[in-house]
Image (cartoon, rainbow, N blue to C red):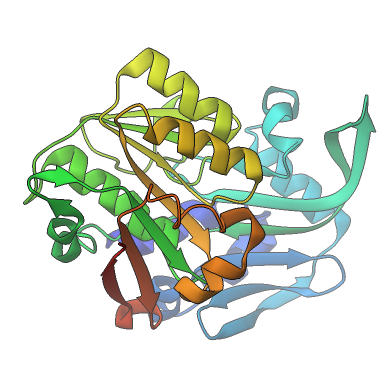
Length: 301
């Protein structure tokens, strides 16, 4: 079985039986292209492709289906995944992510769990080994990796590119191998399951999962002596402050941020200081979708 088809089967394994049968009835070509499986109460389950959603044959999703999905995804131990559940998602074997919506149960000012589930998304984790190989060399200057920012709109493939860039640098594929520390707050880069990364990040990579990015970067610096630090989706002022501090410690940085181009980056208040600071010396932008994506490397002065 091809890797993409296996990934689909793994992700679909947490669906309740009658919905799993509907997913299994999809043509093989659809399974290879699928990106997510969506469940919304009162509507048929759907499979998501890059161009949109397609309803599956089968009954409308009932609240009981969502409870069954949670039981299957947690391996019948919901209390053991309470911390992940408080963030609205679970990571299952294979690195697939189960996102959940419902009623937030809060305590002491923070969400403790989700109740009365109303919808779910099973995001199919897939790697694209080699997509960073052609541009990795452009990120080096005089033999040194330059701090690099990956900029693209949501869904354009920033995380996939960052993941393969980490793997490429860690393995030394066409570039000098380096130790990489990854602050993976949401578990999307390594998709650790029971402490084991389900997605390949390279042999010289140390993965810290579930910790706020700013705190995680500092922990990695103190504990693991990284030559490179990587973080996905810079979204808060404290993330920027942590990057500026980490950059002053001698480690090269790899990070992603939402936006379309450098002008868009300059308009975003949270990122306005990143480029003028001189911290990042390379900017990667992504164009196209799916197999037609292309990557452009810009030298920042």
